[in-house]
Structures are given as C-alpha cells and as structure tokens.
Length: 242
Ligand code: BG6
Ligand code: MG
Image (cartoon, rainbow, N blue to C red; front, side):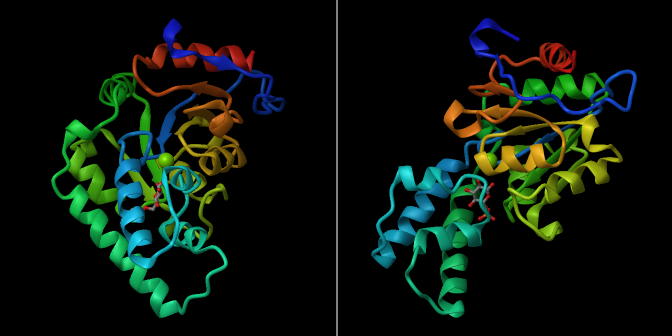
C-alpha cells in the first residue's frame, strides 16, 4: 500500500475463520462498477437532474450522493419521496432517464476508466485471481464493453440476476457462485454505503473507496484505486486476518 493511499485498518472484527487452522486465500475480486471502475456517477447525476428538472422536483448533487448503489427504480422512488405517481408514470420516467443515460454512454471508451483500474486488473490476471463485477446497473454489460475490459473480467452480474438489490448480499453471493468461489475467498471493491453493507453481509472482505462517512464500515478504506497494488492489498488483508 502506498503511503498516499491513506490505508486505514479499523477495529472492525475480521471474518470468522475459527473453524480453520489458516485463513483462506483470496482467490477472487469482485468489483462494483459505477464509481469504482468508471466515473459514470456523473452521468447518472446529470440524467437524474434532467428528469427532476423536467418534472419540477428539487434535486442536486448532494441528493444524488444518496443514490449511489441503489437500483434505478429505488433511486427514482427516493427522488419522488412522498409524491404519488401511477406505475405507468414511474415506468415512463425510468425509461426516459435511461434514454438520457444511454446517450451519455454511447461514445464512452477506456478513457472513462478510473485511475488505477486497468493496472490492477492486469495485476489480478497475472496473479491468477478471478475477477467479477456485481453491479446495481442494468447497463453493466454495455458499459463494460465500452470500457474495453471484458477480456479481464470473468463474470458480470447485476441485481436483476437475484431477488434482492444491495444492501442485501445476494448479488455478491451470486457473483462468487458464478466464479466458483466461497464468499470468504472473495474481496469486494465498493464505493457505496449500501454496497459495503451488502458485501459485508455476504461475509466477504471489503475495500471501501471514498470518504469514511460513506464507506467507513469496510475492512479497508481507500480514496480510490490510484496506485493500489494487489500485493499491498494482500498484505493488508493478511494483517487483518492475523
Ligand atoms: C448503480 C449506481 O451502480 O446503478 C446508481 O450507483 C444507478 O447511481 C444504478 O442508479 C442503476 O443503474 P442503471 O444503469 O440500471 O440505471
Ligand atoms: Mg458504485
């Protein structure tokens, strides 16, 4: 871990490995997508803002922060608050928001990868670590294709593959199953409070990316993936296992 990476190991209890003489190795890494691999959070903000303006609903960047990790539908319901709306109107707004979003992402490419992501993916490949993405986004396949990283991702899942969205653990448990791994063999990168909660509930190791008041429940907190190396992360996890 680089000094500037601001690694914090808190006093959160590490996973319970009491039934084993040695802690299991980490064999897989599961990434959230929006806000971890790519900065699409800004696109989501712009498109929710456009929809809210058209509907005369107050919205701003701060309100958008509370939507990180939520599904599109849960996000809209949060924006609507106590306003009542027919199901048809809700569906129309969800479709409209996604139309705006698809316009934003149609020309995106690897330039939209967040700093450090590509290097880390290459290191994981070299270290024979399996990789997955577990996202709340229905656009996950489309975005991964645009970013050009599909060749370094073994499994792509989203919350529509499972019953319950984040903060339920389902999408991470499902991704681990698809990778052929136990939850405790997986490490998750997340930028959302609901995502950190989901990964902890899945009994996985969790690296939170962002401010402590958002992801401070994670085992390790880093500002982002810039300068993060797999070997350093493994050492940090091993010291937590100790
Ligand atoms: C999450 C984002 O990953 O996906 C949310 O953090 C977003 O901001 C959600 O609303 C749903 O994305 P999509 O692409 O299905 O509208
Ligand atoms: Mg995210």
